[in-house]
Amino acid sequence: RAGLTKVILMHEPTAAALAYGFGFSKPQRIVVVDHGAGTVDLSYIQAGKGRQGHALVEVKVTDGRKSGLGGMVFDLLTANYLAARWRTKHPDSDVSGKKVAFARVLEQAEAAKIKLSGKSETHIRIPNIAKDQNGVSLSMGEPLNDRTFNESVVDPRVSLASLCRRFVEKIEAKD
Image (tube, rainbow, N blue to C red; front, side):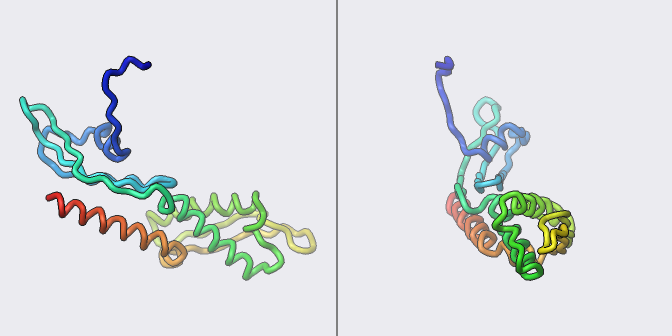
């Protein structure tokens, strides 16, 4: 319908590598990791000169996981950790059971994850997250460091490491 004569589907990281244009005229090996919101995709690409001096790009290995390892999983686990900490300090107030309050916690969990990419500690502050028995507004204030974050997301980290090991084994088998 679109008038295309040939359609080639490719793995998302492969498409990203092609779009980025790594200077494929010289021989090189490239690994692209796309750790998206919901998925993880990996591609191992060899590039160099093909016939008549044209750039040649060959996808040697692809792997990935379609669910359970994306960034949203890390955000959700961090938000669950924060909600649990809140319950220990405020047993009569459960932010995880309140849609709007938990959405605010989830948003701050993602922001904290991003901040922890560049430093070892951050502080989460969410004003007016709940009210106490007397109707007084309560705010969440919680430090989060690398160690605590890593402990709260240990399961997907282990799975991600396992996926990467499997990917490297596939590469070694191809080379």
